[in-house]
Each structure stands twice: as structure tokens, then as C-alpha cells.
Length: 236
Image (cartoon, rainbow, N blue to C red; front, side, top):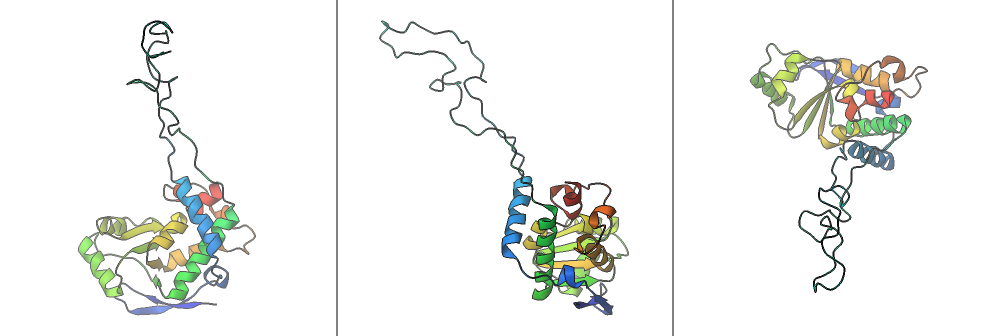
């Protein structure tokens, strides 16, 4: 069973935490992760783009001049694609790009990605993200103490207003809840920082051996999870 050291925001050891072997000790499955990322990006597409065909543009349908005898090219309608203001030919049309990936595959991809971050040494567990004030300077100082540089994903167990306010102006840092964790964020960010509570909740949500599974713990769908997070997988 993987064991990680828990640190506080001053980078001091605050104990140890045993992580679930089923969630943080899974084998790397690149094909599964690739399928989950493709589904996530496809589900993020709006699919609302669309051009007007000759049946959609405004204009009379009458024939502008007779077919023969004028010396001009034959024309049937002012809405022809050959004319300015006419319809578009073979243009993009609105469609649904979403892909339905089984929930077990989504959870399996998350387990594989989280386990790989742990094996790389890029997963850090913090005792609690307790800031004295919602100040960006204090938050950046905590990141510096922990040695976090580059793209960093911070996962909190629940809503942390002070952490959200302090981090929203910091580039390359994203804060999500454990229920809003998704495969794309885990792969895009180089460092993954979990609070102790978030790590425990992620284990409960992604445990493949739990009888009730994560579905019993999920009741609503948050905005973050709506983009492909753990909670959205259960609501799908």
C-alpha cells in the first residue's frame, strides 16, 4: 500500500498517509487514458457552429430571367451559392460531438493517471490549505515553500473560498474539488497537490471494490464535474 508523507504549507512533515493500492497503485494504461482524454475534449465542444445553406438564406425563389435567349448564364435563384449573399455549400453544421464513455473506464483512467503521478514523484499531500487571509502573496509564498513551479493542480475536499480567492490570479495554477477532478487536468498539470481530505475522498469515489461505489455518495452535478469530473461520470 503506497505511503506518502503529509506536509503543511511551510513544507514541514505533518505525518504520513497510507493511500489505497486500488486507486493509487494502478498500472499505467495509456490506451484507456487516451480514450478518456478524447472523450473529455469531445464533450467540451459546443458543436453550435453552422453555416446557412441556400434553403436558409433570405431571398426570393423566383427565376430571375428566362432560361434561354438572353445571352447570360442560366440562373435559377438569387439564393444560389454562386451569388453574393447566397447559401454556403458543404459548410459545417451544428452537431453533437459528445462521446459516451463507460463510467468504469473513466474511473479506471483516473486511477491510472493518479498512480502514475505518484510513481513520478509529482503527487504531494498537504495536511490542509488553511490560509490566514485570502491573499495572493501568502498563497504564492506557500507554493514557494512547497517547491511547486510550473503547472500545478490543487485538489481540495470541498469548497475553500479563501484558497479560491488567493489562487485565482496565479498563472498555471488551478484549484478544483475532489468531485470535480478530471483526467485532462491531471495530465495537463505537471504537479498534483491533494489535501488530506481530498485524498481520502478520491479513494472513496474511485474505489473499484466499494459495493455502493461513488454513485451512492454523489447527489448533484457541479460545474467543474460537468466537464468530465468524477461526479459527472456518476450523473451521466
